[in-house]
Length: 213
Image (cartoon, rainbow, N blue to C red):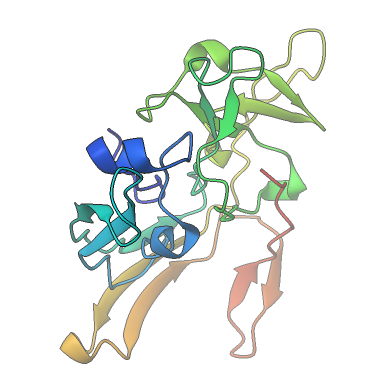
């Protein structure tokens, strides 16, 4: 199972069997405990669903452990779970949103469309599906802006150019257990990227709207 921070948490065992969801994803509120970037991480918790074999108050539960904080961010990589190929669930239309409620997208250089991530149930990449046209100029691939956009057979020739803006952010330190202040380091972007001035006069790349994934 993939351990990428944006991968959805899922029910297991009896709790999964009792849950009506096809993908066994936890609800949106619990998924949001894994933010894409920050110094806190995830606290351990228990998630319960009604037990159809029991009385009105019976539940079956899974426990989910703590996860380390994500202390660095780069716009070269995807932060969106993308699609999951599940012919076992629907042979005719096997593409499922890996996490329907996920909405983190990354802006790209020149507002270029980059690929949308595609994996199997366990989060393993499916390179055989790279280049699949999913409409509106979007195509399956790694999902990473730095990897460009795969070609669509008989259509868009794609590009191998790095479509990221080159921005990077790192958490340097916080004020201990209070965790009310944080120092971060920012690398604005690729040399020559279009930029805009902040109120402090520092130059940052202008972030164009990213494509909807």
